[in-house]
Image 1: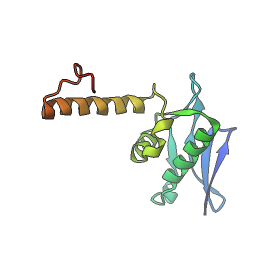
Image 2: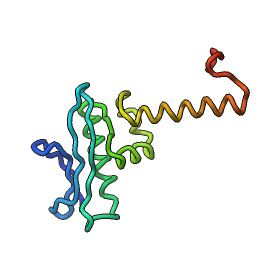
Image 3: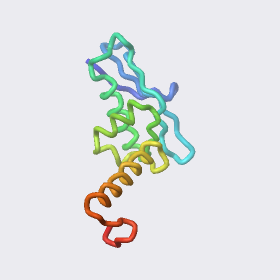
Length: 126
C-alpha cells in the first residue's frame, strides 16, 4: 500500500510503499509565494504502478489546502496537470505551463480566423 507524506526537512513530498521510500516530488517556495515543482522521481523498481501520479495529486492537494499556487517546472507535473483540468486553477500565471496555455489560446484564435473569417482582434464579442 502506498502512502504520501510531506517531508519539510527535505522540501519534498514522498511516496512510500510498504514503508519503503519509492519516490518523491521536490518543491520550493518561489518569490511570489507560489510553489515551484522542479522534479518528480520514482525508483525504477516501483515504476509502472501509477505512483508518480498519486504523488503529484497528493502534493497538489496539499499545496491547494495551504492556499498556494504552483509553478510546474517538471515535465511530468506539467503533463499530469494538462490531463487533469481540475488542477489548472492552481497554476501560477507566471509559470511556463500557464504561458503554454496562452499559446494554445492564441492558436485557437488563429483557427477561428481561418475557419470563420473573423478577426478576433477587432471583434468586441471575442
